[in-house]
Image (tube, rainbow, N blue to C red; front, top):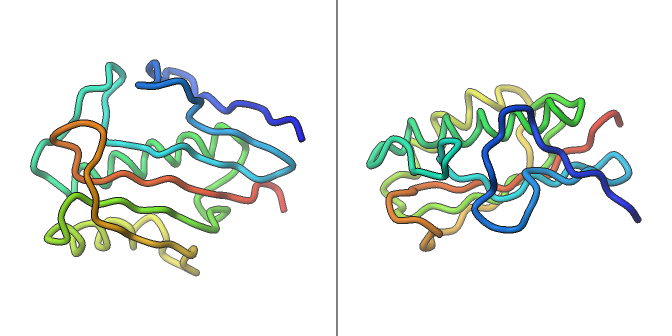
Length: 128
């Protein structure tokens, strides 16, 4: 099945060979999103709250560029470098998903750039 890459206006160049999102048959797959600026520098070092907000705002931009809203998100894959940041992540996460919550999992792991505390990849169903 063919897909359409989703690249919001003003996006920086990805760190690796991928698109920020891929839309196929109404399903949007948002690539793992880190707390980067347009030059792939880690923003808000040591601040899990600010990093989570930046990651979710970036994801929101991809979802909206595909024609959806955050209410269309059905699943999130969450990666944290330290469980000590779990409460901060959840506090911000609840702001972006105030109603019915999408499915998700959360694991602790290393991330691609030092200083990044959180990464989220998302699946959304657009226009269904």
